[in-house]
Length: 290
Image (cartoon, rainbow, N blue to C red; front, side):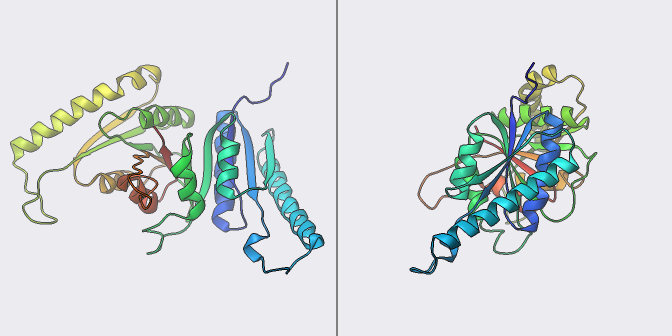
């Protein structure tokens, strides 16, 4: 009988520290899922190329070094996770194209590293992470470098109206980890002055009741499918990204929808809320495409 995994977790690997952290997270996720771990490492001489600056022997040596680096990482993953099926692949095309190709065949998750917080990265995602999120059709997790996530912390999911995809994914992840699920919904009120929201108590009670009812209906199918998952429902007034991040301080995973809006060539690959959550949350963030 063939007991090989039928699904895979794909992770991108380079020489950075955050990539190594992402690899370890992906390996543990593959173990939890009973999936294979596919490690993709993109190599190219293009980044160092000058006209006629290298010959075929240099190319061969560089490719051999990249293959050795990849194989060593794969062997380390096998050692740390006995029994895990690890499939290393040297990516010949660009990193984004290669990871998308690897995840298009039997993969249920794509994982990349996320650089540490700084002003520049608060505005733009890295080229690989941004390219992957812009085009992937499978859930993608960005893993931060700083610190390990809370292993027994809850899974936190931000749920927008009429968006069931993150809900099912979050329930499945909470059940897989045997941790509670914290479901977050935010709402806003017209501001008389920037940064100040004065909401009449009756209006706040009415809006929170409406949001809670709509959220309960959206969660109903997933609750039926995952009856053992304990659910903590939170409906709060405030910007969605702020509410989600505040609710995720002790989380093992944060889940958001992609909210892709390709309105013009300079559009962000994902919506404002997931983009900000990616850069503010301390835990790994899963972005779920529609």
